[in-house]
Length: 394
Ligand code: PLP
View 1 (cartoon, rainbow, N blue to C red):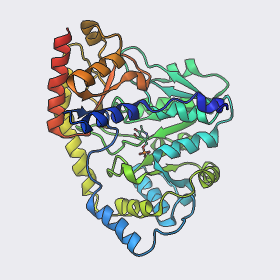
View 2: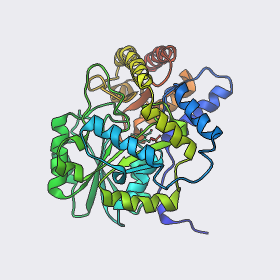
View 3: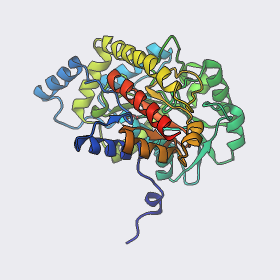
View 4: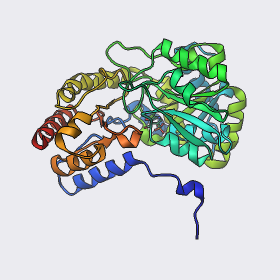
């Protein structure tokens, strides 16, 4: 029996496959350093867990909630966003979903017709293209200028057709950690407005910004840009809550009204207990956010120079946000004779017990992604092993 063409075109997540393999080897007793994780290695802060337990004990988490979330949480998310960005979102602009991942999935379902094209700058987060395909759309990848990790309107314009419906901007970016400046975003936003194209702003890492760099969101720039922007964020990275699956979208009212239908028929509401945990996260003590951010910053400042000095590895400046390094290893591939980053990563795991994600998974061969959402001890160990591995194969 045939499966749908849509589903046959979708590929499973490469990041998940590699981290599964690394976990398996670890289980077998091998001393594996796993740098594939796309999630914080901190426990969810205690006060958030306690609020969830209280919600369970008081029977507040036992029933369906409205599809887009409990009113208090939607209200607080709107206020929290307005405080940061100077926007004027209300409940009707706000949807709570099963992770930011499902926000993005539901957005694709909400705005795309079959054949519509979505511009996805490279490198990109693995799920964007597959979500677009599942909605019947076409993912159009846009390569930055050689030597760059950010796109400009010139490259978008080259890729634009009369079918272009949206562009996804992720800043701080997974996998590279680059952040778009205000001027760069303004140029992209104005281009989208001129061409009547939706902007999907994935701000998932907006609280993980380091060493005095600053973050600006597309929705801060102008009324015209905001009206065409669908904003995605979540609690996974900021509050170390990946397992709770809390994400959200802010957008013009008509978008949220239709998103409600998609969410209502697809998942129904996000688990009520997670919503109460999120309510505490966003209204409670915020010191945990800064503590975790500061810890990532220290790791970046230690790990970046160690990786940068590996022969044949180069980075386009120090990453400004998120928790990944994305070195260009093309020179190292030449030195070591590995055909591509995928082969390099497989051998690195097999021989040196360090798991990384090859750039192919993000549409940018010749690179690898190393997550520093792990202990400092592991990071130092990994850097030593990778260096030795490259030297031995050179
Ligand atoms: N966007 C980016 C760029 C991500 O890296 C992730 C998670 O890895 C997500 C969205 C989705 O996160 P979640 O579904 O946990 O909210």
